[in-house]
Image 1 (cartoon, helix red, strand yellow):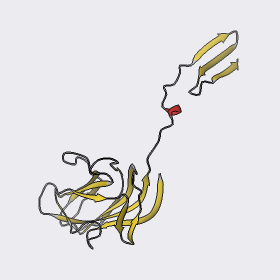
Image 2 (cartoon, rainbow, N blue to C red; image 1 turned 180 degrees about the horizontal axis):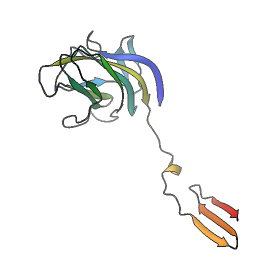
Image 3 (tube, one colour; image 1 turned 180 degrees about the vertical axis):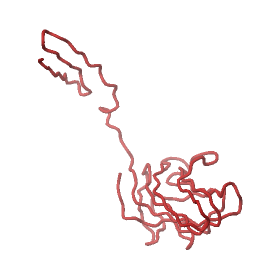
Image 4 (tube, rainbow, N blue to C red; image 1 turned 90 degrees about the vertical axis):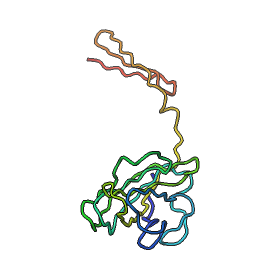
Length: 178
């Protein structure tokens, strides 16, 4: 995880990132990696290839109750989870969200945001997104992916010995005398 100075990348009140308020049940994609427009100008907040992004999501000026879903832009179907609940119309409410970012394909670097006003079309809300961190690409160390070797316990009188061959091939023994 890499923390960054909170950087505003979406504010539909001022048409930053996307133009106009979110309309109920209409999903929109937001680019979050690479060179993007922010409140501080064009910059790279999250490098290309990042696998996830952590953001602060705020709903402002909602004209109905509902919820906001955030998911990878390559997700299919209708969003089924809520990342931010709007319990009262015109409520300003925020939540922290961690979301996977596609690293290949047409939706590379994008997240999808959807406002749903209890399935009532034409209701709207403004959204604000501040990126606060990201997850870079991860390269696994094969030592941690191998299956653990079984531990063998043997008894000789009052001595018990537990041993196995670890992922590095070294024989590890622990002997206890009771």
